[in-house]
Image 1 (cartoon, rainbow, N blue to C red):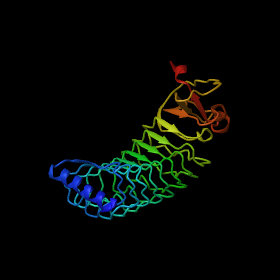
Image 2: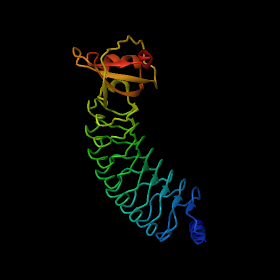
Image 3: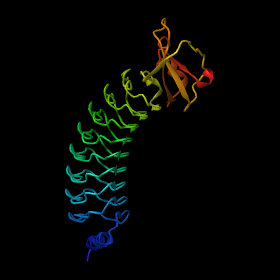
Image 4: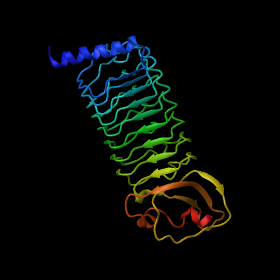
Length: 300
């Protein structure tokens, strides 16, 4: 008997034993699997959490999870996957979390999450992605966390998060993005964290985060800190300061004015994290006539 047949026989035994015991979790990580039988999880109706991390599964069967209608969490971290079948999650209407970090995926199917209305976390850190489908999250109104860091994305679809009103955390750092659509976060008023550093961005729209009243962490390369943050309230005094340097990871207060007009407008507190010499940010990124960055201690 070959090693592959022996592994498949052992795999079937483990899965069938779990199913007979009505176990809702199935951990098959780091078992040396290189191939999965098409029907290995078929009708495993009590399965909620499944991990196949740290195997060598270059590809997956098209209907791998047929009948797994209670499946909530899937882990394929570090499996050398090169592609995903278009309908692999069809019928997995309870799916909440999908982890695909450290694989070799270049593209994703257009209808990957069709019907997955409960999905809240999708992690694709460390793949080879070059583009994303327009309607990837069309059926995912509860999406909260989207991680695409350390890929090869050069652009993003305008409507990627169009239906994601509950989105809170987005990570696109360490890609090769040349631009960000002006309306990418137009419907994401619960957004809190956006990571965009280590890309090839040359500019950002002033209104990129205009609808994101809850933003509290925005990280990008120092020369791109020119953007408009959500309005909070008016104030009648101008606090001026001559800062010799910016303190990394400090919540500064951003104020905007038309220079000659009062009152100034105070925007949300935001953590400014500069990836290069922070002193240059004031001269190359911010317009002094339009913005002032205020250290919180000056308002105490």
